[in-house]
Image (cartoon, rainbow, N blue to C red; front, side, top):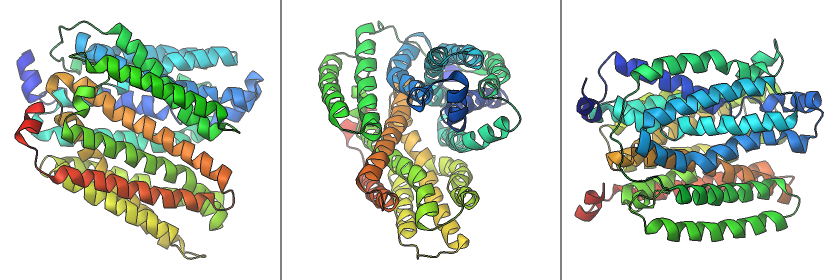
Length: 461
């Protein structure tokens, strides 16, 4: 196969299916490891003889490393190739997983998690860019729909998989299980994944470093609002992050190929889709964290029942994502996204308006509506970000989508913690009410994409 055929028409079957298999395995590991060890944190703290405030960095170090390295690694992918960054990230992730499994102290485990996060970032920052070269243009939405399904199932399955493993093995096996999967994904991916046209521009090392520091500081500040007893330290850190972001913007806007995709955000479809994604993931984080408290505390359901009640949302996402991906190949993202987000807002509002003693069925169908709405929005929105970007900027578009998810979820978690501090008796309900507001804001932003692009806007793509 020639490179030009790969670039313009995607990969032929069966190589396309093997390439997606490699993507699916790697993305599953990278996403699942963000939540997989949460259940094991108390055990890890006991075994390594550290306090909860220290062991929480086993999770935070992983997530923070991903957030601050997404854009620099995507820029590197445009320079050396998305497949190389992807496979390099997969190798580092697998080796770091072994280091996590063998860690005998908290500093060693946290250091290994930082390396693991860097590997996960290499996977996540270019996975959708690779899908753009795996699938033909007319089927791109289908490929992104499958990717959305994989991400949704992986994020949801993390706690269940962890519980199953911990019932028969010690916590290091949560990391060791990545070794055979990583080797299998690398063996398939090294052969099946497509190549992409390489940029001849020089890698902007200074811009990459400034990007990492600015975004890392911002994420730490947002997270700090939810963790700190007072807001003095996170507010100071937030002010510093704003100064760094202004510096970053002034540095990047003068460059023809910025590390931060300012050029893409100026494209109307991409900018609006990114803003929609950010708001929607704030909604998801608000609901996923607050709903267990709402079902257990406000409505009086037991913990086992709460687990059942949470299931329809991710199941509905898994059901509708492939269909939404196919629909996005035929219908504009503004229409699909707006319908989905309005459904999401209505579903959350119906949960807030539940009677004091609701039946399980009354809750299950409302959760299903939320999942259907979110799933209908997600794949078409990701397709809009990628397809609205020039093909040589696919890596930056992929990183933009992942960054919107991570930062949106971080903001949502910080808002939940803040509301629980301010309104301890009614915080769960307040979180859901705020989620309705964010869902409506996201729907409004999505609806702005319905206006046809002007000739100048179309020329920017």
